[in-house]
Image (cartoon, rainbow, N blue to C red; front, side, top):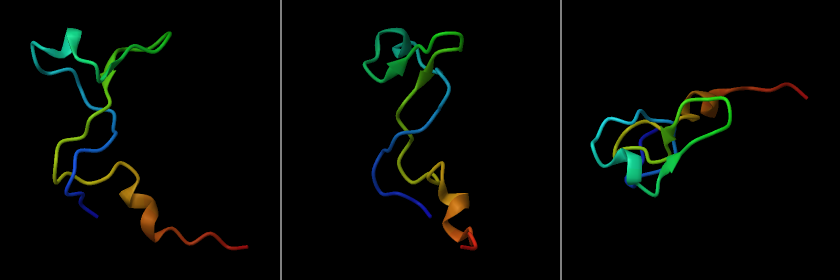
Length: 55
């Protein structure tokens, strides 16, 4: 499953603009991460799409 739009995901801080970017998140006790997912990349939960949960 691919998305045509940028979406939320945990991606690395790879650009010089990252320290001041509004999409940067700094959780307590964890490393900072970006909440944007590049266009046309798989959704982080795409693997769950085919999950069959018995009732």
